[in-house]
Image (cartoon, rainbow over all chains, first blue to last red; front, side, top):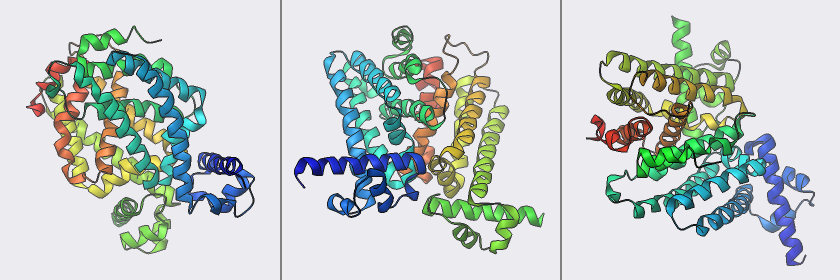
Length: 202
Length: 198
């Protein structure tokens, strides 16, 4: 098998695992089901992965990588932290609404894998929190803001994403952004700056 | 009385088993072993593992809400102080039974779609408490769902604290939780002046 075909097969297996986790939950999976869903021959799985856990991690890496590349690209286009954060939040909401299955996998269904899914969610949350916490560079007294503020902001955003994709229906993420931005900006820059966000977002 | 005791014993066993093994990996056999009861007693009380876990989840939600409500009712203080009193009661409840705290907060979301209604009710009930608490308090005009957003954020902050294996130190989060809960209502400066933040 040439490398392109190998990559294609690996991607198909990852996509199959994502579909099965979404439809049945991780504990119901086995290697044979992933191969069947991917339309690959039995034995294909072992060419790429040593275990289901490894396939889960590879699938997560694919989806997380695609998400972060897009969000970091819009984030880097802006100069001011508030503009960066607003652009990143809007891109996150747009991506999730446009691609609900990957969003539901990352936010909700991955938790069915227990510690495996939680560890990946926690690492992604920490990475985003570190990016958010660069807001300190723009405030006069950075030590006056709690060390947990960025984690708080990740938590309020994650709650809305989780609930959007855990239960059908409910308001879309884009319409919830003004309120989330109000809370996030208030936490670093004060109420007045936070309230201004209520009129800025789409 | 005996039936109630037996049911509670099974729920305690379920909290320990689910906390140790995770909801998905826990079987009815694990629960009856942890509770030290016969399998038949389990099925006299619950139809399935999920039924038992939901009873545990509902009981924890009800007890935590009651603890927070009671603490707030007993306080004659202003809104910021009542928020602190309520959050302290919640953290004390979580600290009082680390197994139950992990099973309730950490394992709930692993159940899947069947837990969603209960999760929404949990967030909605705590948001309603916050909304009642701030009635009459002089705060800016805010979006209708801001309490729900705060309650949801608090849930996931506690989730990650428990995930980090800190059930016995969770009380130390009080100043931060008070500050984050108050920022939207009284502003960042005043929220830091609330008692728990020193």
